[in-house]
Length: 195
Image (cartoon, rainbow, N blue to C red; front, side, top):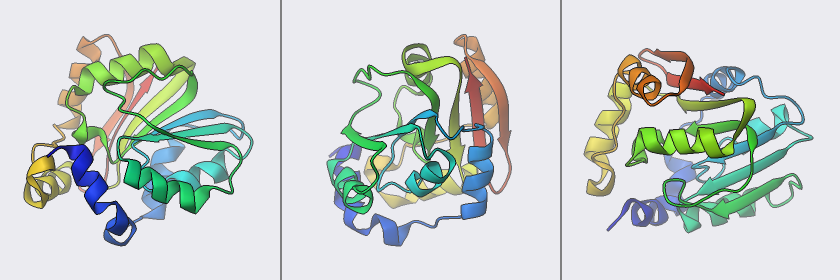
């Protein structure tokens, strides 16, 4: 049983399980300075939690939302199929190639689930981030909270962990990435990478 199976199995109940903190999400997205005509990639979109926020910030650009869970994507498509500048794709960012370039790439509440974290982020930056683009890894909960949640939820996600934000920053820098901001406290966790 894989993480894909896990997310497919909980997709139907996902929107009732999660808590959406609008002020935290807006604060995190502000770090990206999204323009109204940006080309945005939402990695691990799930049921489309960020879509309403992204459409508000980016009404004229394109938003591509990808996820490894077909069941999650189906729910997101049903909720947002009326939005013309939005597309959905079943993609494993660790394995699959995405052809397009994006001004902004967002990994919201999904980074711990990557197996090859640094290599995957490096690939996204090199292959998919436009020059002068920004990528954010963002969580509207603390590392401590998320690590405990994953540990106690299900064996398929029990190893999904965040490490201390400056240690993660150092790993990225050692891989040749430019980390322009890294921060965590008992409320949020984020890193911003620029190109």
